[in-house]
Image 1 (cartoon, rainbow, N blue to C red):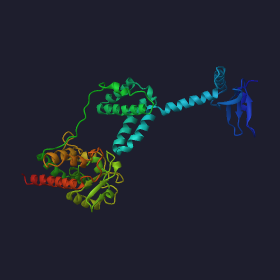
Image 2: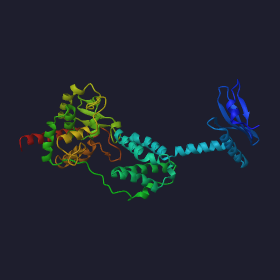
Image 3: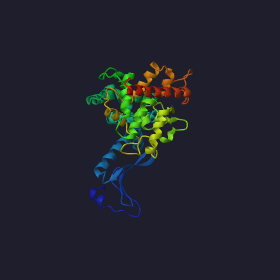
Length: 400
């Protein structure tokens, strides 16, 4: 006799599993704990098998019969419904593993070990915010150029033209990785060349006229904000480092005896350790700052949270406070100032300058120079640079 909803609701568990049979192999198994599972008993290839069809009451009697009938249709076509389900599950798992997000995260995990932390954070944030919500769940091989353009148009729509171009660049890197790993046939981003609003990278605003540098340095010396921010602003022109590297400077990395600062690879954009010789003036400023922040991990701790380094906006905000707007000068622009004047005014070798800027300088054999390459020359260069800046201030102070 076929089962009824009333009979199912009244079914009580026993000491052993109880089976309540319906029709055509369908039955309900009542476990000793009270759970009720739909099962289908069938034969395939001469063997008796069972297939789970769900749990009652989530799967009603009517729905269980529909699932039974679907399974029996497969049997009629010579397909084992149990194996069919396993194959469908594998296909779903493969689709998830080959989704744009899965491939992108795999690519990011492999590449980000070579990137500075700040750079890696920007890229994963861009992927998560601008690409994953619309492309993330889709098989990477099925995504077309128009699909990508639709997403990029959303970014352009909020006025973020640079971000749209960078998102396109990152998408292309993901697709090329998918091609290399056999999960896509081609990179569709190449079809989008010329489809976005034109954008050109802007160089960081910098001051390279010595007559304009003098009042800037005097203004920094007269900075009336917090002392750590003032010290950071004083050090930035002399050391040629990136603002992010300076902000994350730790006391443990500073060797006062050797007058050097050793930056570990994970903090560098190039993911190569960097050694910065410290001019006398820099050592003097750091010794003056040490009594204030020396108990902290960070040389320049955050204004609100001393457990974190100074925020990325602090140095630029300090320059704005001194009257320099973003179109005139940014904290990153001090590198361009030093690069220009060390070459054109002080006459130092470009490769020494590039090495001190922590750019990817190679030796004649194509290998990256190690952190101590040209150390003696770079130490003399940075000391000469610090002395030159002091000379500019002194000349401005005398009104010359």
